[in-house]
Length: 311
Ligand SMILES: [Cu+2]
Image 1 (cartoon, rainbow, N blue to C red):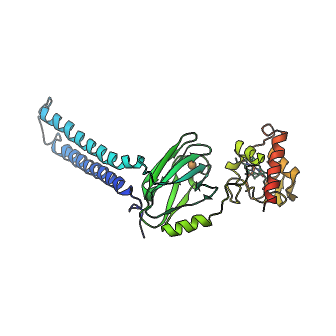
Image 2: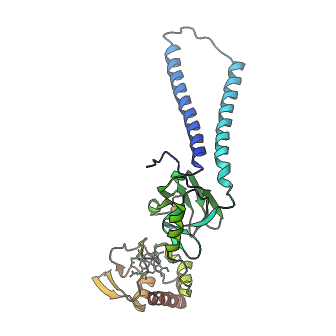
Image 3: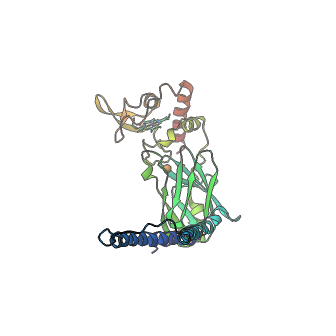
């Protein structure tokens, strides 16, 4: 099994080399300065040197301590540059996948409506990740591949890699993007080419639920940052299977069960904290009384009804 210290992509080696170089230099300098300081404190103490000499400049020494660090930092720059340049040069044959960041989950879009929670990639194939944010700044970080790039709304960023080790690795978000930022993780799974093709064929196209007007309203108002469509729990309950189901809610009068038809859904949007779905926190969803107007409200309910009929 691979450890976190051995890179799993073609880009890892150069990153590790730059890191180890900079780390070693820093380590050596830290030790050297500390030893020198201790030596000077002891050797030049007042007890030992009664009449200290005054120095006023030493050209040779000054040239040395300018040139040597200059060479060292230029070498650091060189190793950094050698590692970084290929990261921005995507091979033309790279397979495109879109990484979508939103509060607070990653999803990976393989095209044709095929969207996966985990990033499955074929061994030894170049992969280009197009980075898309639905809301705020995120950062896509795959430590084992030694790649990390910002995911900024409205800005077309990208990264690429070629996985060279089979296995499962972690994906993180590196920009503090709100409450559940630390939970914004996923897995990269590197598999053989054939297994990958099979997995992709089997991956159900969930992304292309026809864009009913209600879905546009949900997207436009940021509802989907807290409510998923696929059954997963984000901050609020998933919208999957909502319409027509029984909900257990907590009101000021206590617990009760309601049927999720038009009235309940409208109430939940306009005044969400009057009936709070059991197992969820009150006060997270703001009332949309002044935000969602009559017609849009009907479109949302319509969307819930239609998507429940599709099943
Ligand atoms: Cu994030």
